[in-house]
Image (cartoon, rainbow, N blue to C red):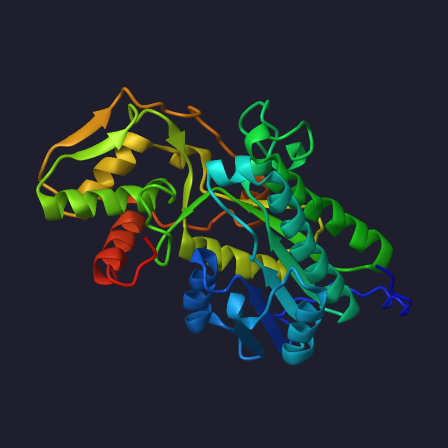
Length: 334
C-alpha cells in the first residue's frame, strides 16, 4: 500500500479540554467499555465535545475504504479505539492467523486514517493478556515486550503489541499524539454474561441468577483462591476520557485498581451471591482447574498522575452489575 500525499506537519499535543470544538469518535462503541464511556460522557462531556459511538453497523474497520468513509463522514478530532476481533481461549487457539491479521488491519486503518485526517489524539486499548507469559509480578508498562506472550493467544497478542510500537513510531516520524491504555479485568453493565464464553464476574452473575431461579446450588469452578484485580467499567470509562484529554505520551498507561484491591475469586463469588440475595449453597468444585494464581498489575504511573482517584469498590460494582443484569435479563448478551 502506497500513499504519495504529503505527511501532515508535526503537531503539538492537543487535548479536547481546550476551547476548540472536539469531535470524539469511539470505535467499538456498543461494547462493555464503549457503553461505559457513553454513560460517563452523557453526564460529563465538556461543552466543546461532540461524542460519536460506532458499532459494526457503521462499517468494516478491516476495510480501508470503509474506514476512510467513516472518517470522512464524522471528521473526528479525537479517536478512542476499542474495536477489535476478540474471542475466548479456544477461538484464539484455533484462529491465530485471523486474530493477528484482522486486528492488524483494523489497527493500521485506524492509525493511518488518524494521521491523514490530522486527528489530534488517538487512544487505543490494549490488554494485560498480551504481556509475556514468563514474567515477574507485578507487571508494569515497561515489561510489555520483554518476552513472548502465551502461545494460546499469540496471534491476538502480537497484533495488539504492535499498537504500542506504532504509537511511538507515529510520534517520532509524524508528531502524532497517539497512546494506549492497559486495563485489568473489566466488568459492569452491558457485559457479555455468557457462562461458557464470558469473563469471570459476568459469568458468575448469570450462573447465580439461574441457581436462584432454579433453586439449585451456586457452583463455582475451582477452589476460589486465585487473585485478580477488577475495574468497574464506568471507572475505566472515566479514566479513559481523562487519558484522552490530559495524558500526552506515546507510552502506555495501566488503568487498574491498586494492588491492595486484589480479590480472590471466592470473595467475588460470595459478593455476587450477596448482591443477588441468593440464599442457597455456594459450592466450589475443586476438581476443576484454577488457572493462574495471580496476574498482578502495577498502577504506579496512574497513581503518580491521579493519586486521589477513588475506584468503585468490588462490592458496589458487583451490586450495580447484578442490578443491571436482573433488570435487563431479556436483552443482555448471554
